[in-house]
Length: 503
Image (cartoon, rainbow, N blue to C red):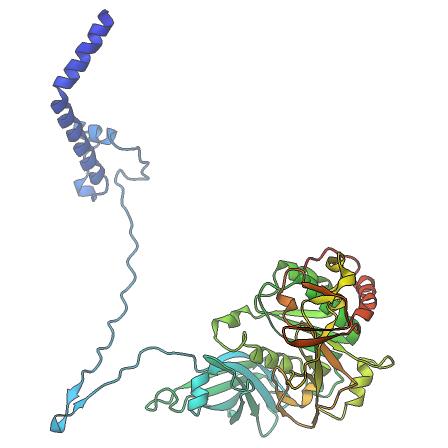
């Protein structure tokens, strides 16, 4: 009872002194706050360590270790300098007869004058420069280009440079968006660069975008160190018989379809072939697992071109990419093929090979290839329950035979005679072209299947002909018949490492 009585007395005392306690606690908090501030004041305001009040105040603070001083100094970074104030725009003014003269004040740039990707030699006196440029500038303006060769270690006072007009080629058929692809041909009157040097490109707007302004940008397009020029390259036999220049790969691509496409075409084109793949975001880890065995065998080179996505051009800038590939490898291959990874080149005749076809067309710089359009969802009912184990071109066996429509063609060129190229054909080359290749070579097109990660067979039928959505199809087992040969070739060449590849 005594303890309970004492507890009640304490509570009563605390309750009666509540106002005084609140004042005491508030005062204590205030004193500690002042002490905290004093810690960061210059030394002339600091409290003596011997003073009683200082000891009290310091007891309110966390312990701070000071080096060589009892005063803490806080170093603050200087704020970044402010940008210069904008130039004031001239106001409208009233001229004679009370006419109000309005002003237009430009700010910034809508698109770059020129975005350089690459430049390559095409001979002792000729070069090609690949890049992007503002499409409106070329559609509505008249930009011009000048090429200049500056010898190695040149000085402005003692060395004479060589200049020539740069001839522009716009190979994208007007498909550009904000940017269009530009190929600049620089051909000098005589050989340049035996002792090294650099190629400068002078890109002038000539009033495009602003008729009162002629902006010229000077770009170092190519540098050659002394002794790096090898003239024999331009006349030597090529390293490869066939080289594939791929368009930009992007999106969530099917690793299994890439696997099938590579195995098929490495077998078709043979040991003296090479495949240049351009990754615009499509070479995700599962696709990389498919590419690696062929890269290790020396059949595939992968280019990371994701940086081009900064510039809004047509279809991931594929016109720019194929032109870079053309000029980068033009002396490495006898024939260069341009088609997509959902398309399969086929030589129909049993006794023919890709070599016999290209040899028969060696008198042409370019030949085009006829398309066989395949259904991307019709399969045979006999494959029910087995479709997941079959390859795409093995199970998609119905061909579109609708008449009266234009079908895209793909093509091959002898690159040493080509100045610029496109997606479906080149229009800038020396020599002849032929479109009459029916019966000798064609390609099967499985449109859209490369971007599908699920089973493509969505309708299984048991018939030799069928009409779906107004499109007539016929059974065509041409590609199905050679699947076994391709599978055995893959296993023989790279082993079983891709057997568990997913759709």
